[in-house]
Amino acid sequence: MQLNLPLDNPYILLTPGPLSTTRTVRAAMLKDWCTWDSEYNALVQAIRYQLCSLASTIAPDMFTAVLMQGSGTFSVESALGTLMPKNSGKILILSNGAYGERMGEICTYAGISHTLLRSKETEPITSEAVENALKQDPAFTAVAVVHCETTTGMLNPIDTIGAVVKEHGKLFMVDAMSSFGGIPLDMQDVEIDVLVSSANKCIQGVPGFGFILFRRDVLLTCKGNARSLSLDAYAQWEEMEHGGGKWRFTSPTHVVRAFKEALDELSKEGGVSARHARYDDNHRILVEGMEALGFVCVLPPALQSPIITSFYSPKSPKYEFKTFYNALKRAGFVIYPGKISAAESFRIGTIGHVFPIDMRRLLEAITHAKTW
Image (cartoon, rainbow, N blue to C red; front, side, top):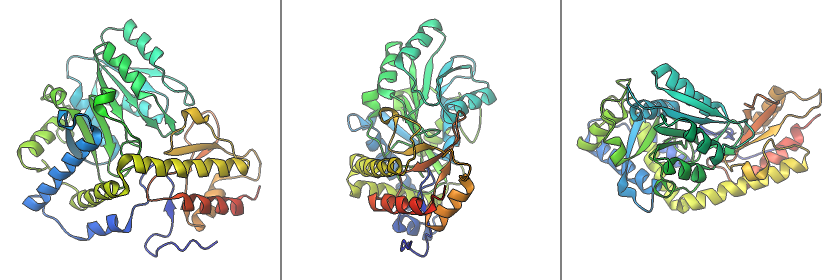
């Protein structure tokens, strides 16, 4: 099957990130930038403003953005280590997948007092469970949850969880790594104090940095909390805020410029609601086609995000993921292995610069690759 893919992009990434990006986002990296140049620093400030505008249409000025070098996990670690005081406080981490577990691991490394409230990988975190945990231990000062847990594609109900957190007067942190920019949410409406995401997810930039959105009044209480020099989000914010967009250490200039292009392209597409509609269409076409081919989704529709979908592996002895993967890659598509512990599975993402026509082409490729 001929896909007529551009010569510089031999396959489509159907993963939770990095994603397939536009040619114009990639082309934005062809110019070199000086980290101290006023034009570059103004670009950083524009990005910070745009991120706050995406974070809340209700009250964008109540929030501030901190850009942080590294992968998304660097920003999660930076957020946790900056939010939680060194000698006080305790955080309740809600976990139903690998990325909730990773927040717990970060806290263990950093010596942050925490408790993991676990649910099965195929079950959402409930507000009732959070309510019970907060009642049982008044020492908790903060709660953290993953919005879209890409272990399965689960979309956790941050609105109802956030309501309970605020009823108890706790800080609320959301890892929106794989949802920010692709699923509508308002930090002010959901009462989120800290939100973390990455350049190479739904905004469709390239890997190299993440970002943390803080409620301004919360961040101002965090000076001196950080356990790490390079991951001190308060110090990074202070430099950017008062230095006109400067970073404390060498920034990924080419990636930052590509991200600005990606943000502008998100706006041209019609914003988060339009991008969410496209992702929804991609997901619907994928699931309907896969089920018609005999595949079974791991999650029921009510729990499933339009970001990435887990499918049970076929039970046939002729099926092997690596063979299936390589056949699809030859056809122009890269998918993801499964991550749930309870069953063999694989995952297919529906975000990035991909469209319904790509989903239909993928289904045709799967039809040809399905030899069991």
